Image 1 (cartoon, rainbow, N blue to C red):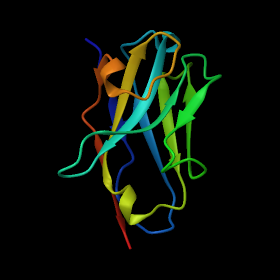
Image 2 (cartoon, helix red, strand yellow):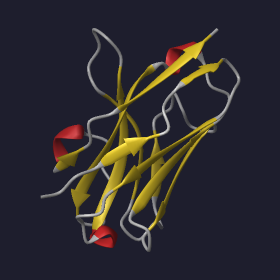
Image 3 (cartoon, rainbow, N blue to C red):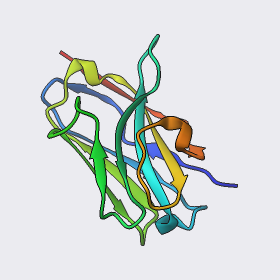
Length: 124
């Protein structure tokens, strides 16, 4: 059974940096594109960033472009979201997702597997 496990979420101050990780031990990891999404109370799940299986392609939402960086380590089956210059509006539960294939998508409906999420709270 495929499990995605996020970690790294916590309470931080505005302007701080935070690193989220997602472990995917049950996947043939390099054959899956990975994505990060987030959801705040009362809002729909929002795309944050995605990276291709090979790591050659990335794509970001406009709201995080230039502040967040997605990367992956296919030897360790992990994907990371480096978040800099955090803002209170970045507060959300952050989810890791996996999609079979190398292509990258921002639509959450294209993803096959999801983690349970990790809470990021940015106080301002």
